[in-house]
Length: 234
Image (cartoon, helix red, strand yellow):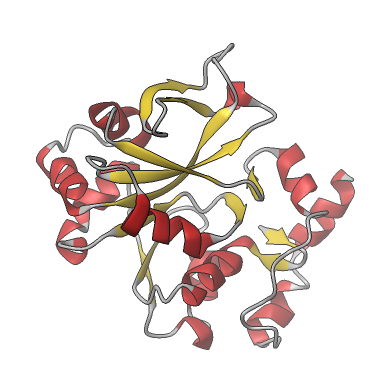
């Protein structure tokens, strides 16, 4: 999906590149052919790899499958249908150096105008998650789970040992209540799986591009029907 004419996934890769993250796995189940063509661009060579799941394993199941690739290190897991613009380096620094003692993961949060569509968190006075309300009609607040996580190795080990817990939000998170730190994104965080959020994202000021030059892929992408479909929605 484009944001200001560039694919959302390219903005994600730019964020990772700027924060010196050089080993990236991308689930390419949905629209596989389109995504794999995108990943062949020279700018992503040798540091971004697509991983095909014939049958989706779930957000936790994917982590379990590749646990051997991720062992003994902090891992970033992101739902890439989020348009996320923030001080990402501070998010990483918070997790590495400032998160509350005894926490094993950090979740990025944001204030949602539509809390009933989100997973809403309740925190203690240290900013640690005590309760999690997944898409309830009348949740107690609007501080939402942004589905961007930094995970310590113990979380990945737990996921591997509990293969029946295939969804991270509903299967893994409840096990870590009281051990989940939070970092609030006060800039832009939108779930572009919602049409109104996708359209609102087109009016946001995007961050500077990491790769401003237009390669052959970008020139072809600018002729893609998705741009006309978006314009028709306005």
